Image 1 (cartoon, helix red, strand yellow):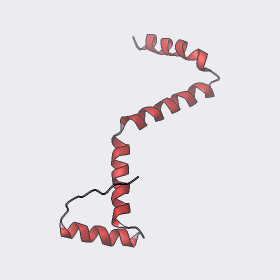
Image 2 (cartoon, helix red, strand yellow):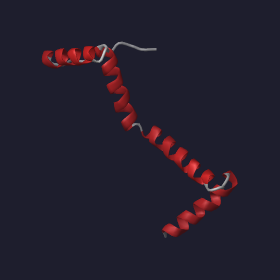
Image 3 (spheres, one colour):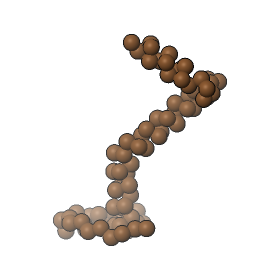
Image 4 (spheres, helix red, strand yellow):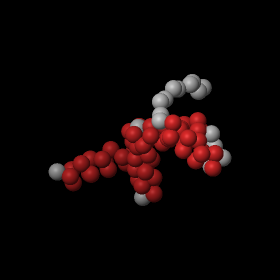
Length: 82
């Protein structure tokens, strides 16, 4: 579900944005939604953490380890850091 959002920009910027969006075959609303999506995605730590866990899982499983091995791996890494 989308809801309207009102923003204020200078006329010059609005006109330039409209021209650039049209050149890409998009509406200004589409461009602004994409920019907001990218902004939130770049700053939302949840996505970063999920990606990090995914990479860790892939690395562990590619080395032949399973879920039961993870506590030992974590202990080993933590003890090597001290």
